[in-house]
Image (cartoon, rainbow, N blue to C red):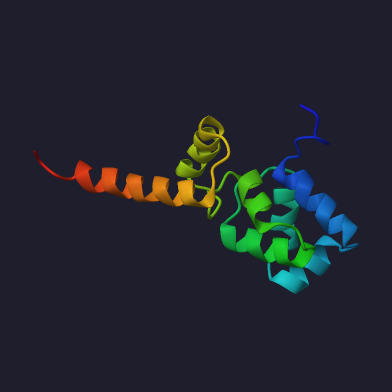
Amino acid sequence: MDENTNPTLGKFLQAAREVKQLSLRAVEKLTGVSNAYLSQVESSKIKQPSPTILHKLSELYEVSYSDVLALAGHPVPGDHDHDDNSPRTLDRLGAVTPDEEQALVEYLAFLRSRKGRKD
């Protein structure tokens, strides 16, 4: 696996820290996370740090919190399973006008309301 195209969390955070020209001790002072712990994260000995720590680091390093969460294997807010179906549905329908879109939304609401009924 090429680390340049698919970085580990540790390598990603280390590179982000180095871009900011911060030492592990400086990060410790700015975030309250011990430099020993940070070193273990960067060396991939700790593979899934808490979202709280990742948030502190992503803010300090000015990198995407969502990207850092994903690299750590945490769920990413706003990343829902139903979103995966949307592109397929849109591909099958092709371009729709605003009126058609509204009609589809209304029809889907109708279908969903009938689903709960017992006939």
